[in-house]
Length: 161
Image (cartoon, rainbow, N blue to C red; front, top):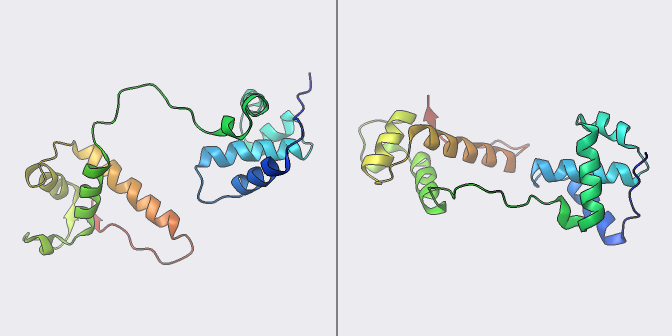
């Protein structure tokens, strides 16, 4: 049974085109918008699935969700689970600390290691966060900063492993 996409409104077509070519939107949203764009161009589910390197079931799911909910249906829905233990303030403190040369904080070394940063976060900032979570936060920020500055020389968070 062939699944056909309803005609897009002018506004939907504009947003779908923008999202499907975006370098700043979430990768999942870009992928979903591209599925809708390809379907609106007349491509069938098997071709879209092959082009996007996803299963046909996933393509059908997003086409159906778009048909039922429009653009809103392409957004992530809130997931269940426990809330984050650390808020934006703690994360910002860690990132700020990681980007500050240790010597400016009166420390006797010139570069951060994850162990040194974890110790500083725990003992000085008073944030009881696991070393692995600190690593994730710093790497997420480094990736985000690099992505925002794609094509230009970007500064990295100066941490030695």
